[in-house]
Length: 330
Image 1 (cartoon, rainbow, N blue to C red):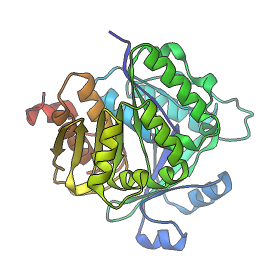
Image 2 (spheres, helix red, strand yellow; image 1 turned 90 degrees about the vertical axis):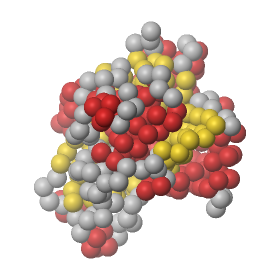
Image 3 (tube, rainbow, N blue to C red; image 1 turned 120 degrees about the horizontal axis):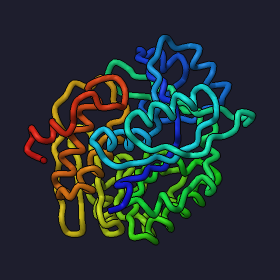
Image 4 (cartoon, rainbow, N blue to C red; image 1 turned 135 degrees about the vertical axis):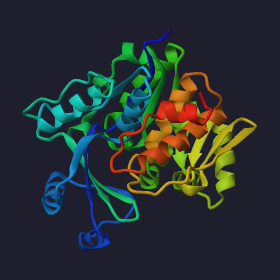
């Protein structure tokens, strides 16, 4: 048995969550429902404009790994933070979830700071993310422990990290070490605008290395540059062993070769959509690495997504294993 079921690699950020009216977005020219990158000055200025907020370790893959750890999975995370106050918050919070975290810290004299994402949550539950990447942008191949990757049944790669200059090489190193030891690779596309920025690199990685692709409808359509959702799903399924595509209130579609399953969305009052896709992936991977079938994995993912959007923040507040048991899934 390998030491880890899943090792995630992504943007190590401290999430700053604040509930705001739609007018605040308009006032600050923030496009609703997407992630946009900011520099340190802009991020600091926006931070000064918000009220009391909730601050926890975040970043898409970190949320997924925290979700797997919550379920009792053997998991670890790789992402760069600085030896500063926010870096300490990030490391302590993630380890407290039960995940291993040993990525070397950027030094105190590094010109950048630990990254942070200001997540503005409007009354409809939609989240608009304003991200200062900071030192996480400098994740490099030297931060990848090949022995750790070899000890992973799966690695989970965050699409947002494609924005880093050396991250592609870091991903390549991780993939080689994992696959060389018989492991498998999963990738999340993260955001349709991220896909637009890096489509060619994504396509090559998907064709050459990815065994499990996570995405939502918008990301899927962007990746395959089509208005046909069914056509995009079919094309993805021809390139990847397993495709898990979420579709908001329509649930999720899971494809494996000629097989296809639909997992219904769970009815819930949306409070904060932050982390829905991240927790879907976490529950799906936990199910997969614990030998549950793909239909059950999809259902687990939808249950976890519904739970996390029912409250503020991207951490599960319910005992998901008990919920899965109550639904007859475990």
